[in-house]
Image (cartoon, rainbow, N blue to C red):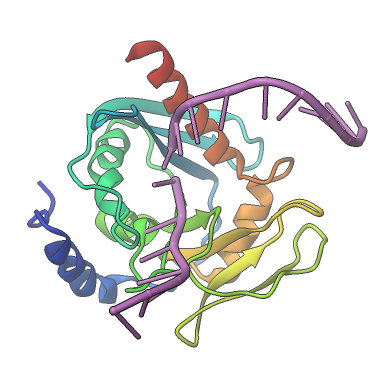
Length: 221
DNA sequence: GCGACAG
DNA sequence: ATCTTGTCGC
């Protein structure tokens, strides 16, 4: 469906190496997202079935303007570094069914803070052409703890490069790991995450999407 | 060779 | 990701 979908981990790695150069680290001129989409997947343990959800929020009010949840399956096993190949197909299906095109994708996982600089957020961004950012709960890289205040951050390093930031979204709460996905810069990415994570550790986009696919799994599977 | 390793 | 009880705090 998408360009030659990989059948093996080796092919998946090769695809990432070919696509990584397509990441655009610059935001569109005058970029000021009015809507942001949260994406997440919930798995049915023991089977390969899942539900993928996308929720679009108005950035100013945090009110939902559209949402989609679809059932799906996954071929790939979970392999660190190849996580995107588990969720990408189903997430793309959900995105296609939106009635609005979000200005920004907020993904559950890494963007360029990845061994080959091409995590889920970058992959989704490049394939859709939409600006995207990665927000992970666990880092792929090293960092020194940022200060305790909301908004404090420290660089996330991998192989001697700054690939993202450890960003504290709530006082005294474990930081999130933000990296650019596609067509955004790191400052903008962090500013958006802080705006969306006004009350909890995770951005409201992620929380909404998480609830949507989890509820679908609980009731309809 | 061994450890690390998003969800 | 998912399995789980109690517990601390506003």
